[in-house]
Amino acid sequence: MTDLLYSEEEEALRSAVRDLLTDRCDAASVLARAESDAPHDAELWKTLAGGMGLAGLLVPEELGGQGATHREAAVVLEELGRAVAPVPYLTSAVVATEALLACDGSEAAALLGALASGRTVGALAVSLAAAPGAAFKDVRHEGAPCTGS
Image: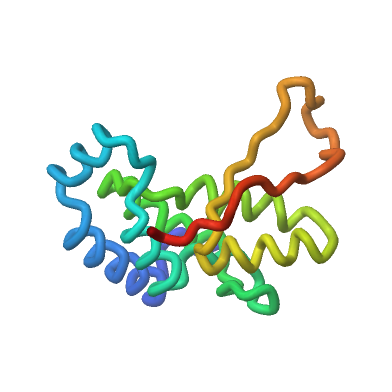
């Protein structure tokens, strides 16, 4: 049976993320970001992804990630949601990462490394014509890597 309580390490991760977001995600700045043309806070994402390594939590270590579990990702998601942080964590570090983890090949591995570092922001787009549970016929990489500027 899985323990439903968080471990000391998971609580330490929670505390670190919460401390950063307390300093960088006050209500006024979140509202200002929502009313701006910028989709997310690139500097905050750079800190979370590069400085703390959170973009690569679910990516295996041999591909440049942390090799953590979904529990750690859930802790991060809880804190990001609590602060309404304007970062692409769910789309890039969870959804796109999980889709690529199901793919074979060097291109998927390279994209996972780029997602893990935060240099690239991922989003999964699935055609409405795709049958539920059907295998994807191709994976496409579009656009330039995120430079954090």
